Image 1 (cartoon, rainbow, N blue to C red):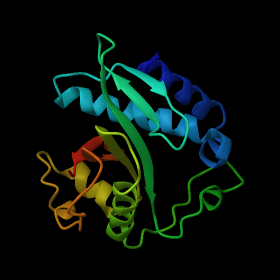
Image 2 (image 1 turned 120 degrees about the horizontal axis):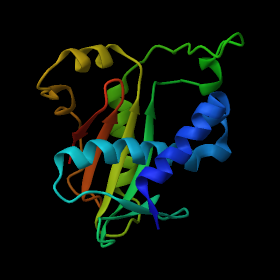
Image 3 (image 1 turned 90 degrees about the vertical axis):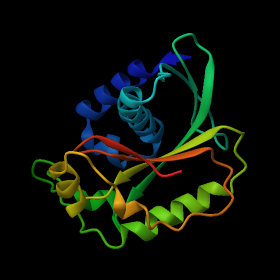
Image 4 (image 1 turned 45 degrees about the vertical axis):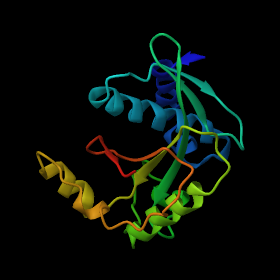
Length: 184
């Protein structure tokens, strides 16, 4: 069991050390998940009374983490996945000179989000598993969300969700600005 903050800092160090490797390398997936966990916990802990403090890293096919509160009592399991722009390839996001991001324009992010939710809803997860979808889509949405003071996430109300889902909660994590949205 480790502090979520320590897992996040570990991921941040690797991210700063070698951003290209951090984003592209399949062997760094667990570090990327730690980064997403840290970002999610920062936002979650601002709005939910029982804080996410500790995590155990789990191995597939389990959820990615077991989450514990300050008293080290188990709260829930957490599965992380990422919604990317359609046909987005991480390797194309860099220019050789300076590693500047070149974002592939988004195309139908709602279908991708729905696909991920449907895919995860029917996996064999333990009870009390939460899904966090890192909404890594570069689109006008970021500018829209940033301009709103009290966000009403009407855009996500139209998601087609399964009637029955093994997951107890589904959250979207947006960055730039950092926000979380509870879907289920």
